[in-house]
Image (cartoon, rainbow, N blue to C red; front, top):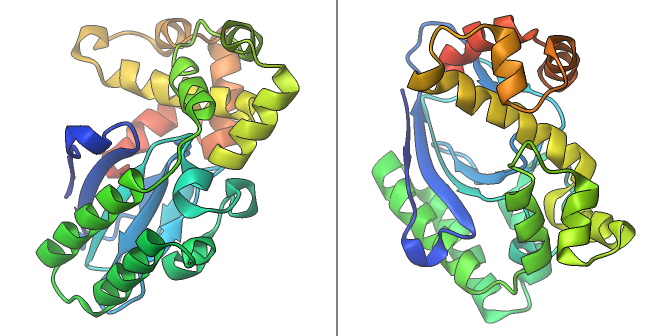
Length: 253
């Protein structure tokens, strides 16, 4: 079972959602796909972990935990929220306390560290869900955000956009854009665009209006040059062909 809850509107620009996943004990691993987001994740009896943005799909073994509770942050806010370059954390699973160490000197950072310590002692998923919600709101309200990196992350959700067109629209040199996005997301705008396009393909495939469409048609709607282009990108980012990826997504977060 997997479910998401939208955050309060006041922090929705920074926090994507709160979520919970329970293991159904059927032996099926969970496929976690690259989405350019990062999560703070609670499991019973363990320290809260940071799951940094991934460059490739990750398979979480069945039975790794009976329940996971998390708060997911949107692309483009990583350094603002954590105080460190996301490129230093790419593909990592590390202690959330360690990841927030750069913010230990400010008052909100110390409050966040206290919440993380309490979360490590929390035994129930509902309490963890409530506390992670508070933590997400605290970090969102107390962060000085990079509006350019956030806007790039939103604009590149559009498959018709290119990195060059976004840089031109924002009147920012591509080199500067790359540096700022890499600090906030973990990788540069070209990789971000690839991840966003794959996520767009999955959203289109899930839409009732596209039910029954062929993979080639879905590829065109998602902005790929053709089906082989989609196949190459799907294999590179997930390890699956598009058809196999769609079939496997019953266990996707």
